[in-house]
Image (cartoon, rainbow, N blue to C red; front, side, top):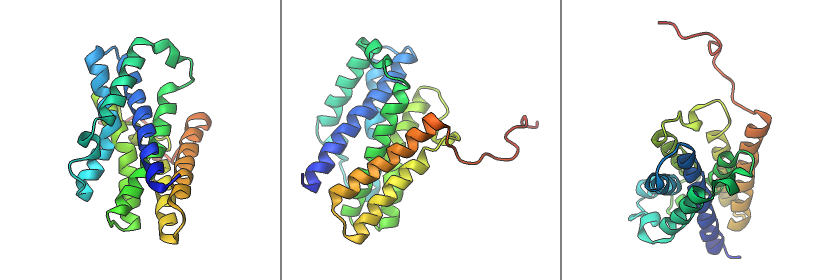
Length: 211
């Protein structure tokens, strides 16, 4: 598998799983079919669109072709009409979100690198690609964005993105670094979900806010 094919394949998979995470949230918040489809689409494309605008890749890939829209519609329809199939998974939203986070953090970093962005800033853009869709999804569904909570989220994306950037600097094969970065991010995020890994909280977090 060439690096280009690997990136395109991972992008499509990431689009699908992020769209599923958005669609599941929309269905659980009892949105109508249009609302579920909109949430699926924006969750899948928001992070990538922000990255593409920042690096000058315009129009963004997610609106330059039909693939993201088609995958989002498929995911939205499936989540809306077959919610019981998704509910068989434990923590379905978190699982889909973790997969999309890892994939987009890795591919987002690689795309930024291909546009001549420095490795450090490319890793930051990769993290932004990963967390952008989840932030928009949570805001539109009236939830506190998961990136602002104590669970490891943005840090997992940054770790995966940093591995891709480091591999690029060392001249390692792109496919290897993409898969490794994705796997590391996914592992950290799933451990945060299942094992309760989180960043330190403020010392006053256990006291009620003062007036």
